[in-house]
Amino acid sequence: MRNSTVFKPAWWLKNCHLQTIYPSLFRQTVSPPDYRRERLCTPDGDFIDVDFCGAGRQPIVILLHGLTGSSQSGYIKGLQTVLHRRGLRSAAINFRGCSGQSNNRARCYHSGETEDVDFLFQTLRQREPGTPIAAAGFSLGGNVLLKWLGEQDRNPDLFAAVAVSVPLVLGICATKLDYGFSKLYRASLLKELRSYMAAKLSHLDAIGRETDRQKIEALGDLSTIQSFWQYDDRVVAKLHGFKNVHDYYSRSSSRQYLKEINVPTLLIQAADDPFMTEEVLPRPEELSPYVQTEITLSGGHVGFITGSVPFKPRYWLDERIPEFLLERLPSDNCS
Image (tube, rainbow, N blue to C red; front, side, top):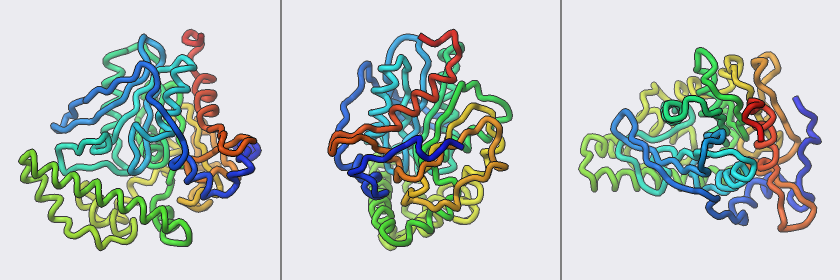
């Protein structure tokens, strides 16, 4: 575990909520160079949209966004720009229905859904058998990444991975969002999820997917949902084959998979993350020898903003993530 002084918050953004909220309100991003979108047809007759950055045969980094995010989230596009500058290509997945167009099945995405990241990885590996591949995930995407890594019987042929602000124990995190200022995050996220489901229902009706439409309608009036415990019980569990919310949280929380990971992996968490408590942080005996943790005293949720001049932030993750990946890149691929 690294010393907490590895990250120093901007003096003008020391509060965990300011660290969390500032990027979503003020971070300005543009599409990075060599940027293109590709739609991949999934084995179950649906699709995922992937935004690629970079050309050539350089190493590639798979990026996984958080809940209600997308490849257009500031932390994704910002990182893609930095990776490109450092000689790495990237492939930012849009989880189902997150690319600006609803997907074609009732199936959504959730914290334990690892089939799509595996599908993207296998697609890239088949296209480029010799290319070094890494991955980085944020929040929900970090949970998906860690769970996927832990599910592999052997090294999935990644040279490194990074997971940031991960809800390692889903039940604890869902409860944390029921209290204090964190309730505002809960309200905003649930509002976006209700919009996501409403758009899905309309889309399925428009394309004539009657069976899938009926599955969404059977969930009932989602406007009455007031917590993630309720949402995950009524929506996620029912749509994705879990017995109930307890079964979903038990099977999908990624902390239990950390011991099985055999890819060099960095886990970055802030002790003041308003989406969770320190109770979710793993104990040393829960980590495989390949997992390194950096627990900072501050940083909020996917914040980690430093810099001495107000409104001229430095996004520390854009420095730390490429640094970790490049340190583990096979030497014959280093520039």
